[in-house]
Length: 452
Image (cartoon, rainbow, N blue to C red; front, top):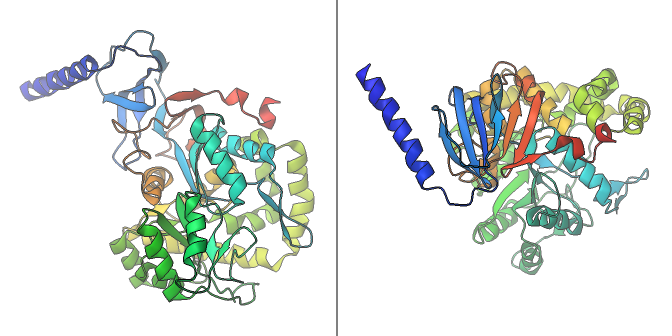
């Protein structure tokens, strides 16, 4: 008992000392009181916690009551749950380009469509996204507006255009195409001048499912490119779909994998490799599953998040035109089978201690919650999925010192929930409040159908 009293006294002293160091101006100070804290690190939840946010940072976390500075905005967290803002680490934001009925990719630069998609993420509690390939002028301009404060949006991290081999996966008009070294350097320098947050490569020859073979980026050239970007402080990710190509990319120095292995079951040794190397792997289960889901169960579009973020016309088109298209595609039924294989693969990697990262390869907030649901269906516990959806995303970006968890000194990207996501990951949809950079997001003013 005496030791407990001493510990309690010390915690109160630490708290009071911290407040003594607070600046005189307390504008933007926010206090969330008496909340169950789920910090994103995987540690057990903390009941009856208080979190003080000053400007955009988490200043203090305490299990003792906090006497806040004057003019502090207070939120009563009684009966609620606070977790970090979620992070979708593989999107292709709609609005930049569009595939025509003839299969051509054309520039659209439809900014309103992009903003609506970004707002669907915020509405869904996703406070950071990584765009893994888009029209550079479009996505990088949106990124600049978000960072300057002109655009209400999740944090945007972006590749711009991908880098790949001529004729290979993603080798469109917006990509940087390279076929030799050092001849590739000027083109890569032009890409680097746009300040990509992460380099996205593609290392894919296809020849599986319904897709014919295509040219493959040479391994030696990929190694040169990875080293060139890393030497300039830029992390790298790669599109692969098989264990063999993922292994090759890992051993020539890739920093992260943009997808799970989906061509077939992984070996036990690959799972152990991922556990040893700690190479972050983005899960992207829902991009393959979404075809058969719409073909067989279009009623998911009646769920609240979809109803809130998609227009009635969009939902009707999905339920009719898109559904018919997906029902007739061979790819739909191939991917239905292979999604279960991919789920088994990510589960094995998780069990081996690998670093999974949540990402959808899509462009809406509701799809992110489907991704988490598929991870739960794979057998991963909800408490682990929370870290996959938060801190591991920051690790993917190399920004774990700043983002991804609720810890003192970190940026205050937070989501307040009405139910416990460690019991059921679908409770992460029960959103009460979204906070980005210490600022409360008014979900009723986002550019979404629910607010029209």
